[in-house]
Image 1: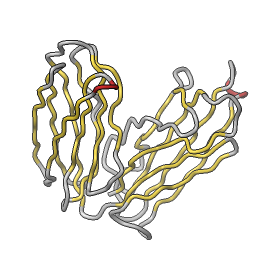
Image 2: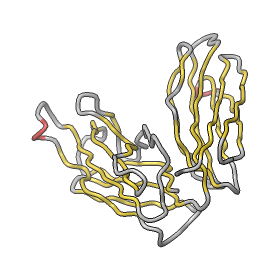
Image 3: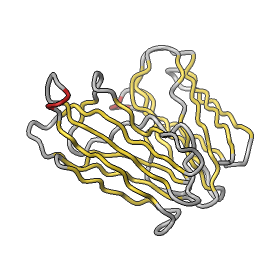
Image 4: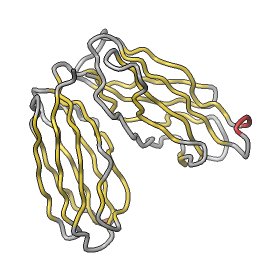
Length: 233
């Protein structure tokens, strides 16, 4: 399986520091020809980033097969004004990821463009299961900051699953993560004010099917974690 670990705006060749960015990064594999979105940002609601910023990932929505090849497609643009024709093309094109090269280790793929570059950190994993991570926040006592990171398959590069403020009971978006059968998935919650957050961790061993749950009780809320396992077919 292929796991996208992070996406970063590595270089920016425009003045002003902060920019408004929109567009998509998606993957196609042999199991499903439809786009599996990793980033999908509309022009009407762009993200504000600067050089070195991580770009929030909304996907993948399903595991990415690496039995043969996977194709990463991208079209990311910098919004400059009122009309789309005036926007700047950050990256545009596609990159083919094949079986040759490093496995079970992370590496960075740099995608250069006319106005900057994007780094995609990824890993090809042998004998991995698909974990669907669901997090529900309940019994909220007061608003708090929450950061959720994920470590998978013995890799030291954390996947950022959520970073924001919780003001009321809610569920976080589902996240799909590839997990090597020889390792585990570890979820790291930072709860509280950013200057004085407390760490809470839980880990799960992979399996071919079924699900696991854990509860984390904090002074701010009750966090329910459910991980559903499946084989990539």
